[in-house]
Length: 275
Image (tube, rainbow, N blue to C red; front, side, top):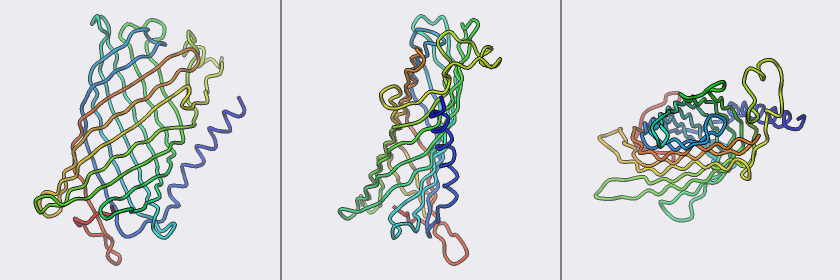
């Protein structure tokens, strides 16, 4: 138990390092909305799979830093989503919500003109819930976790019909972390009364394989506006304390991107991009 608490404190102490990152002269902000399928299972609530819809909002900030000769970029991702799903017999429903934050650092290099490759790591946390309409003594499940992830990204810029387009792929996979989970059959009332029983669990790909992927296309519209559209895959899974959980979604996303560049003491909007 002590080493799990130590890991939790270590992850929490790493997150304030975000504020120590020095920014360079350019940055990108984006906001996209997504809609797609949801496939959910939580054996603490029900042994059945539930399928339905998920709606997502993703806010991203990306900038170059002055570290390693301005070869390291810093990215933040805020993701929030809500879901509604039903079992195959249409006799019960799940309703859920989730919010997550990730701070990512990538080392950048350009092997050929127009292609930028990025690899690095991330520190993140997430919280959420899942409510089952047919639940008895335990109708809802809380989700809370911190993790360290490996992250890769590839960006390709090309000109087509006189317009510069941006193709990007990103994948993040947690490799170590901690999460909260009740024991199978343990009620939240018992936990609230102080009866803890291994409720802080160490996670790794062997017991909590998860993967987040995004493929996007940026299309300039007008002088400064950039349209972003693409596909996002979010897979969260765990098998701890005799409880199996998976929450998988495939979504179509669309939104807008803004590029800024610092000139003197002012920051001006531009069509240029740090990528």
